Image (tube, rainbow over all chains, first blue to last red):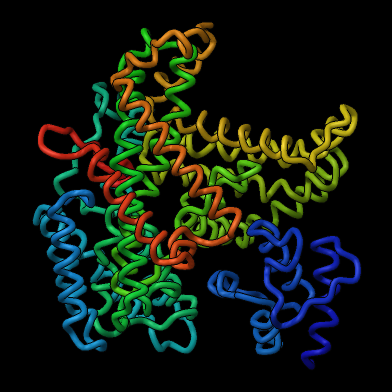
Length: 79
Length: 516
């Protein structure tokens, strides 16, 4: 899977979780850039990403993501 | 050694000189020496031994886990064995009253009839165990999850785990955020020394000028709940919130200031909490590092268990039609949140006054607020209330302050029952005590009250300035021209020296969070 393909699917996940139509995330996107991305929604986002890509993050990884780019790196590493 | 004592100032200055005398690579050595001196001064030999055992256990467990490509059953035994051991020591030494309470619920034939009493273990309890135990647990777990590598050098690790500014009241640092910051030496810098010293001075101002005076009024009211009812009780509850804030954040200012003077930047524990519009936001700005720790090591792991996922599926499938899809979807989160809130209270002490006041009550208000949010929005619409204006935001801030203070009144009360008695006394009608001079009979003279009001005004002005400029006070100060900067610093120093509560004959209150 290419980075672009991951982003295409990830944008859909963000749309569903945060209920924002047409949202486009990038490597530099952080929780501060997305309305509603607080500590509670963070875990819902993780679940949605795990379901979308069929993988599991451990808790250490869940806590470690500092931006979307790091999440995408991990997805590419696992798929 | 109290952080506001002359002994501590001499100790901090000596540690600083020693720290910068060593080559940068080896600056963890004087740090370790300072840690040891601080700990040995504070603790008995058994308490030091307990702390040493916990540090060696964590270091050894992580070293064993290091380098294994795939996690094995033995890795899991070592990880969870050491985490259970660390947690067990913490619970046994700090939260044992809760377990004694549980044992007393058992039938008499099992307990022998006589009620059990909690053992007094203060002699073997290391200073700051509630803080460094959480740091050690997070370290072992991070190495197990392979998000961090273990430290091989035991001395360097001990310098981090026993870092003396963190032992009084935290903040609770995470290994991956602060390990290198603490143990890798920093070059001396004028900016760090001055900003750190300013922060220490600000901490002294909060503690010695404000908190100590508020404590006099609060202690007077809480000592005689039958006499001081109604307005007195409500006032004492609100003032205790301010007392705790100035005490706890003042202590954190001193700790972070001393660290900053060594070039070490640690995570903030407060971020203008009284600007919060909701209780949920408040707890993201108050005791930030405890909230972050519990979220990462309790809330998220609970939510990621298979049991909780099955609960989520059950909730959506079975309860969705009866309760509404949104509520059914969020129910597992609400339940996990309440577990976390129980732990917030439990961490403060194994007593129901903490578990209820700063745990379940706070969590209950937050969860209820989320569930009822659509109702509130609809009511505001029907009543044509503008929710996007300064007056409404002020109302929200006062409401948040009141909710938090209500829970905190339990924290200050003797026990849960005394807390409820205090709540009941709120309904005594005596508002005239605010105007007839009665408040001057609560232990502070007229002059003392005027100093307190002036100091609180300075604190509020500084908070508003930081909120408006979106920067820390030291950063704002560094941007001012030197004459104004030095006038403010020297003015504050004299204010603390002249109006601070200290010296021979003064019974200083210990830092409230130093008891946890």
